[in-house]
Length: 117
Ligand code: HEC
Image 1 (cartoon, rainbow, N blue to C red):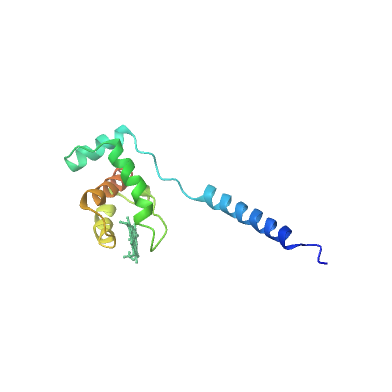
Image 2 (cartoon, rainbow, N blue to C red):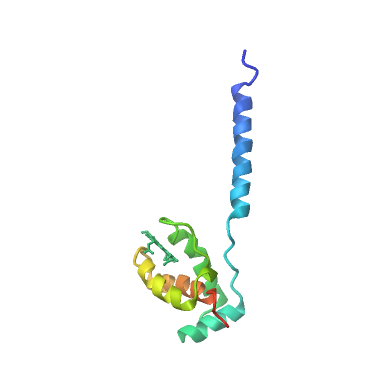
């Protein structure tokens, strides 16, 4: 009889998977948590009323809609001008209501490298 039973092997497999999951989780870059300052910045920038809640919605939708083709790009990877150039093209790839698309856009802009400076 093989000393490594199927049950033992599957327990080992589960531990390996769990360890991998933990590594992936802890290495994945964190999206910033929007603050009132960022909501204020986004309001001024867009000439509309943008709340922290709106930016949080954008934060939550961003990874859901923008990762089918590539990994997440952090908001601070790009300047405002770069996001203004990139985002409209990328938004054509996703199918989302304009208001939701705008929330993702403002979340990215408010976290841009040079936002609020
Ligand atoms: C249908 C596939 C697809 C989806 C969905 C998609 N992208 Fe992209 N994205 C690409 C491809 C392909 C490239 C690389 C080629 C390019 O720059 O056009 C890219 C490149 C990028 C880049 C790098 C651009 C640069 O010049 O460095 C950013 C940032 C980006 N995407 C953001 C987004 C955001 C934000 C969303 C969600 C609104 C999104 N992407 C959704 C396909 C996609």
